[in-house]
Image (cartoon, rainbow, N blue to C red; front, top):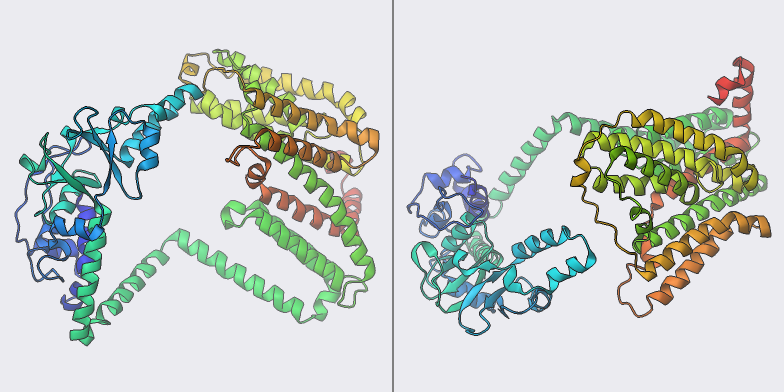
Length: 630
């Protein structure tokens, strides 16, 4: 049966210890034990809309309350507890009494922990109309998610609770004299977690209209009482039979060992074990080598630095295989390189010299410029997104032609990448495509186009690409020449790529299945935040040119401005989701730390002269610089 798994789990929880102690061969299968000791027949049960009509209640649980071999507790306790005792022990009715006209949001605010709402008629407050549970709220939320506007979404929470309740004719019930085992079996087979308590049920545990309701019984309250009773009974048996306390535990330990051995035979587990052992050996060996101040390190420091860089780069490239975060690998790689360079490279005596410390400060200063720039830029974009600022962009997408949409998305990506940086725009546009393009094959082609357009758009401005930004911050290129000389090649690259890719698009009506909401006006606050964010990003090159100060300071100034503005806008709001601190919590901090580790690693290779030696080697041994650039 489809519902027997839960029944067997409940049986196992109640009788595991006693079964393990007296079974002739260890942990006997509980389901088999139950089937060999049936003292109750199967009984028919009413079925909810989610159950099959040919299902019946499994009597394995009910057998526990009548079979003294299986039941740890005396009559009237554990699985044989009457429902009246369950309600008494819980100390509450288990429900909130709601009127049919009350709104969903009001009812949700008044329902206590682990409770449901029983909905009664507005005019006849004794007539039960239905029940509102977490399942009903999930159904409401599912329908609400399909709303096309914010106004339509809000109407769901303001709707009367009677619109989303489970009607009374679908309820199942139990009586005060029903046992806990019966209630568990009834709820399990009907796929519900709550049942109403009445003086007298109808045929097959059905609810009879007009019947007085005494409370609501939850599966949680039942299992809590059963577990408590069985635990107390087992403790008493352990005192009477001292050998009983340890035997089941020993058998359970052996069973866990067997399961662990079975898991170890899995290829995936074996791979992880090899990686763990290899990482532990490599880490322990490295620490021992450095701690011992080995003479080998002093005489082979260059080789050690190359090995650290190669191993780190392998860890980053095969991140998916090793399941190590690339940021962690980059940080460890940079630390290892700097320690080797400071303490063992050249004329080092085991302690970092003043010259090395000065080089470290210089490199950290350069890298920090880039990291703070990326941090501030990402935070500004996140704040704009939180205020739905990108509606300004999505509202422009109205075409139902796939080829027309292809060109629109391409040019939007191209120009946004020049302002917001290509990585951020790629993430935003791919998320948009998930809602906009329902066909998987089309979405892959659109995604490829977005990557091409984002890279083409990020090239022709100093802030459009991380690499360009790093060169700009280090004064290796200027703003105006970059824009004037690279714009035309970038637009040619975009148009040529779009012409080539658009021929693979086949027109059909699939865009009609798009889940993107129809264009709607952006709220005034959202417009203010959007244009302030864009202005902050566009002003960075202007600020840097006019003041001569580093670009990261301009970006931090923009972040401070938008931070102050959003604090003013949301001054009386209790929610923090729209403010900058919430945006900072969502940032890809690991990505920024990855850049920190990589750039610090490249910096130490440059300071040591290894990069220069590599460049000289390539220049002497390769026939063309074009090959080196490639």
